[in-house]
Image 1 (spheres, rainbow over the protein chains, first blue to last red):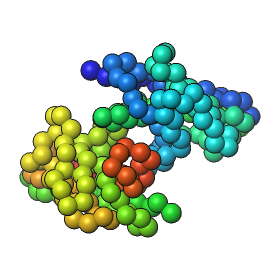
Image 2: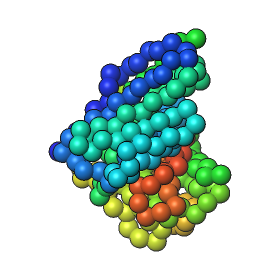
Image 3: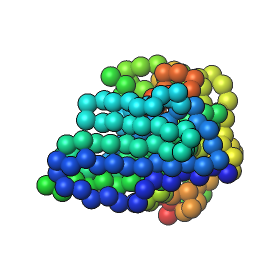
Image 4: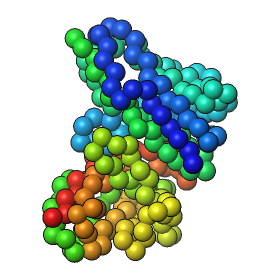
Length: 109
Length: 116
């Protein structure tokens, strides 16, 4: 069965630094990968989508990479701010759809 | 744009009763709606996918008679948890998409169900 792992359940970084979150997967070949942000007690909010034939995608302070050989996606938040503190979820989509376990990011002022 | 609402936001019910949760896309037509459940500190688990006017497609292990889904229009889908039991207590979240794929889903705020 497919397995999706996101690096450490929790990540703490200093304000202004770049946060890097990892999403690794096995036993699946997604057509595209998505990243979402989820705040406590709320539904996820879509951030970025990257297709299997794309290496990198950017949106403002966000950057996503997708390496189908390594079966890995990296999600970067540059110049991080305390308001970026949330849980970030990756999701794989193809014939089926799976969310990762999420990484809780805390940006320390 | 792309706002999805859910009602109610919280519901507490007695074991054995049925609970209906509504999911509405407020400012767009949702070709597809999805229903998820999420346990504390766990990720979202896709329960079913529904398209307007057709039967929902349930994920493996999800009981279709337990979780009834109706997608009556392009802006409304409902999830009914029938004969609820304490183990059905969870956070239920819907999402809506303009396409037939899993592309760019817009999520509702979720419904916290507690079964006593």
